[in-house]
Length: 184
Image (cartoon, rainbow, N blue to C red):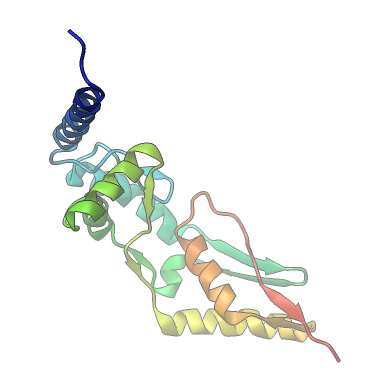
């Protein structure tokens, strides 16, 4: 029996549709009640964990992040702080919930797109946290004062962003103060 070109194309499309539907059902079954595979909080892989398991894993890292010092430096300038001194507090429960929501609760096409990205490239989210703005401002003032004393001008906005990122990065590495040399 010979099939027409139209029948061959229809059959190929039907097989392709079947494979896609099978993949979707398989994905939903594998990730049912769990954080989608390929979901990370920074470098912490939470894929395949329940919300409770993710919470337990995040608690330990959150405590390390809160209490381990961060060095903010540039030649001749050295500020350091402990994130908890800035009022920084990890929120492992809220972070685990945010990780669980990846690929869920979005519009259908967006959820599908996020799930595909998670499977093939991973999806990374940041910690849910809070910081005391006043304490951050004081730290920035201190770093800026030290830098100005030796002729540097601190780019505060960039420094604030680098500090915020460094707080949730593990293992710790020094933060390089973004400056522009003052011209006389």
